[in-house]
Length: 181
Length: 438
Image (cartoon, rainbow over all chains, first blue to last red; front, top):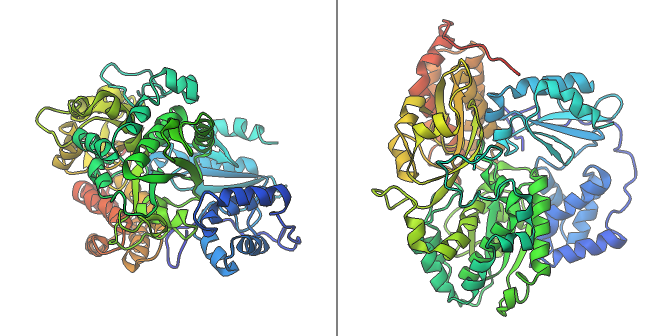
């Protein structure tokens, strides 16, 4: 969530040119469509399945495109504008394509006092990203700072896609990156 | 226990006894450790009797507000013909707090059992466990536990052969601190933006999908089976004798500048000084502890001297100038610049403001800008008045307390560490030990 004159920044992924002109292939067909229908049964209405449906979209395509939002809207009998309003509220839906490995480094106070800023620096240098929210030239990495990951006793926690890594220090960054070819 | 450390002899591990024991994660593993006995007996009791046991135990909400759990449950009118819902708040995102994560990672069935008992007590056939999206491992473990419990007939259409329906579902969040606020969580679960709602109506009247709803924290629900197994009297005794208002054991997450960060479970009323210096190992070599935020980032910052004199329960924390909150204890040592840390906290709240209320949207942003300017060395003495005036306008004037939570570290920080701010303004050197990064 970033709004108006907010002092926040850095966490946003910068729009890249690639990916936007690729035609959208429907996600909710066959088995995936059936899975969504089963999931909807957990709730008294279709709208409640919006967050799960957006997760399914992102898992299939790597990000949540405008065309993807239109498809989700159709599935759940919502308007595309409504869906976009929800997508833009949450930080975990990528509104632009990101690197093959999306790296989130926690920098909130508990990690900040344990040196998280240096972990961020090490990731930016060693991935070649150079800047927060920018995808490396080889398309492999995007690094962002993230607010509290809820593992404060294991400073600094880092997420690489859905992998949750604990107690990362600057000198462990090379070893971490080696796991993601 | 102080996971990942060995349990300390002064801990009383009720909730954390099986942290680190992967075999406790399965249905059979949980049953062989005494699991699901409490649910079995609860299902043979009258729902009101279950509510009364919890009421008598003195259990209070572990998510931050400390509201009596049994009383909250008693607000649900049984037999009103409406569907009731139970929400489990597993959106743990309060900086400093990481206890619910460990409960879900190691003892997922403790939570399933607590949720099922809670649902039965409030007349809900459906319960949702809302877990923050970043908790990928707890999400996978809880999904598995719920599926296994359903396959074993523990939950579902005929829970443990009782004829009662108790459906439990895991719902994954998508990144928003504010969704830990109960009404924002319900909006998020309904497929909406996570904006908090104006209260009243309170959730027990009109909550999830407009129906009567109870929302409880993970640790609160995980404590319920133990209370049913051992009785309200046993639970009440886990406290200091002169304070019956705080009962039971409490998980404290400890992070920041201590030798042994981790989760520790102690009885209510434990001495805070001993806790910090003995259980948590005290300061790192060559350093001294300076300040503590004992209850997650939304409670007042206190000095180490205030903390050392404190007692770890709801009332004890108030007596030493702060609050128990979610018991996410952030420790700062003498290498830390407090203005810098307070600015970082303000930035967190600015990022997480849902932006519905002007006081919060503007206040969190301007507070951050001013503090960051002060940290950069461009502060003036007038900034104190400006910050305190903004803080005043942010307190008690918004739909939820995120705004108040941003004002809290600013006001308490200026009260106790004004000299550090003044040193920045006057560009005088204060003694801050350079930080060494391993």
